[in-house]
Image 1 (cartoon, rainbow over the protein chains, first blue to last red):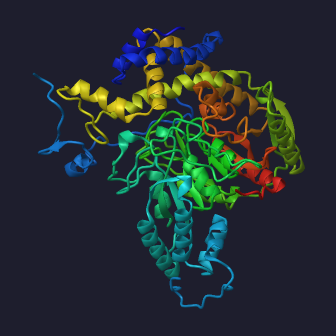
Image 2: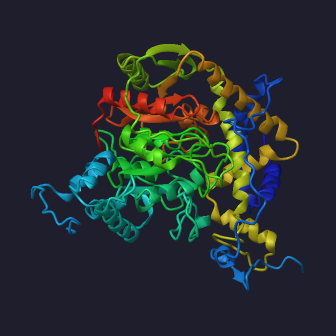
Amino acid sequence: MSVTPETVARIARLARLDTPEAALAPLAAELSAILGWIEQLGEVDTAGVPPMTAVIPTHLAWRDDVVSDGGIADAVLANAPDATSGFFAVPKVIE
Amino acid sequence: MSARPDNRPDTRPDNRPDSGLTDLTLAAMQRGLRTREFSAAELTAAHIAAIEANRHLNAFIVETPEIATAAAAAADAALATGTAGPLAGIPLGIKDLFCTAGVQTTAGSKILQGFIPPYESTVSGKLLADGAVMLGKLNMDEFAMGSSNETSAYGRVISPWRARGSNAELVPGGSSGGSSAAVAARLVAGATGTDTGGSIRQPAAFTGIAGIKPTYGRCSRWGVVAFASSLDQAGPMARNVEDCAILLTSMCGHDPKDSTSLDLPVPDFAAGLTGDLRGKRIGVPREYRLDGMDPVIAALWDRGLAWARDAGAEIVDVSLPHTQYALPTYYIIAPAEASSNLARYDGVRYGQRVTPPGGNLADMYAATRAAGFGAEVRRRIMIGTYVLSAGFYDAYYTQAQRVRTLIARDFENAWGQCDLLLTPTAPSAAFAFGDKVDPLAMYLNDVFTVPSSLAGLPAMSVPAGLSATGLPLGLQIIGRPLDEAGVLDAGLAIERAAGFTARP
C-alpha cells in the first residue's frame, strides 16, 4: 500500500495534527514503509476467527447508578490552560 | 546523620559509608529498617545523595526530596510504633506515566508539561499506602512509545552501563528507561514500570535488572496515562526477583475504578517463592529461534534451559505458529488505541495550548497537538487514525484483532504441553544512541516481548549473562494467565543459577 501525500493530509486533518505541506511527502514515504510491513497480516487465514475483545475473560461489574463524585469544579479546572468563571475557555467557535 | 528513633548508638564501623545503603536489596532494606540497623531517614538521605550525584543520567524528570524526607520521617515513626506498612521507608521511583497527586506528571511529553494531577494513580497510591518513599518521577519515552528513551521530551536517559573498551553512551531501553537506569545505578531500590509491548522487560534486560509484567488486569490502570488500553499493564522493576515479588504484591489488587481490573485475591508473591522447578515443564517456542539470531543470545538461551533442567524442570519443544505476525498485529492495535486515547490532548482541559493568531477552535486543536507531540507519537497517531479510518477499518484493525485471537490461541495450545516458556528477552544487548533511526528497526526490539503482551500473559525478564562486550542480557519467562507465582519461581531459579553479579 502506497500512501499518497493527499492521504497523509486527510489523515492529519482527521487526527487534528497541523502538518506543514513540506512534511507530507516524507511522512507519506514513512507511513508507506510501515503499512507495507503491516500488510503481511493479510496473508493470515482468519476465516471464522472472532476478533479479540477481551484478552483475559472477565465479567463487567455493575454498580449502582448513583452520583459518586462532584462539587470539585475548582480541582477539575485547576490544570486548564484557560479557565474563566467556572468554565473551560476556548477560542471563539461561532463568528 | 539523623537521630535514631530508639536512641540506640550508631554501631556501624566508621569506614562504612552511607552509600553502602543504596547497594542493599529491597528485602535487605526491609530487614535493616525493622531491626533498626538504619533509619528510613538515613536510607532516604543516601538515595537522595545518589540521585544528586547521577543527574547526568537524566533518569528523573522531577525529583521530590522534600516529599521523600517527609515520608521517611513518617516511616520511622511508624516503624517505632509498630504500625509500619510492608514497604515502610523503602525508596522508590515512580514512572512519569503514573499520576501522582500534587507532583507534575507528563508521560514524557511536552503536551503535559506543567500538569499537576489532583489525584493519585491506584498503583502508586497502594505503594505509598504501604509506606514507600517516593524519590521522584522517572523519565520515559513519550507516552511510553519507544524502546530506547530517545523519544522523551525531557531528554534521553543514559544507561549507567558502558561496553568494554568503549565510552559510547548507551540506551537504557524503553519505554521504562528512567526506571531501569535508576534501579541499575542504585538511585532507587525499585521502580514502577509499565509494559505495553515490552516496556518493562526490555529495559530491565538492557540494564541488568529484573522486571515483571503481570497478567493483564492484575494492576489497576486507573490514573496511569493511557497508551494502548487493551495492552497497558503496570509492574515492578528491581534488582532481583524477590524484590520484584515484594513490590508486585503491593501493586496488584482489584480496583472498581478500572473495569478491566481482576477481582481476585492477590497472593503474597515473595512468601511463596521457592525457585524449585521440579515437576514443571518449560516450553521452548521454536519460532523464537530467529534466522540470524545473535549467537551469544542463542548460547545464553541454551544455558538458561540447562539451568532450568538443573532446577528440576523438564524441557519441551513447543510451537507458537503465529509468532511472526505478532509485531505487525501490535503495530496496528497499539497505534489504533493510542490515536483514540490521545484524542483527549486538545489544549482545553489540561496541558499545553497553542493558539495561532486569529485561529478558531479547530486551528487551536491542530496547532496544540502538532506542537505538543513528538515525532514518534505523531507517527503512531497517524498510523492509528489511518487503520481506523472508513474503508480501512476491517482490512487492518479487525484483521489484527482476529490475528490477535490466533496468537492467544497459540499460547493456550502450548499450555497443554508446558507450564512456562523460556525465551530471550531482547534480540540484542543495549545499543548506542542513534543506532536505530529507522522506526521499523526500532520496533523489532520487541520481537520476543510483544506476543505475550498481545495475549495478556504474565512475563518477566531476569539478568542472566553478559554480551561479548560485557553488557547485560536477560532471559524472559512467560506464564499462564494469573501464574505470576510460577513465573517468579522460574525467574528465581534462573537468577540463582546465573549468579549475575555484574554491575555498571
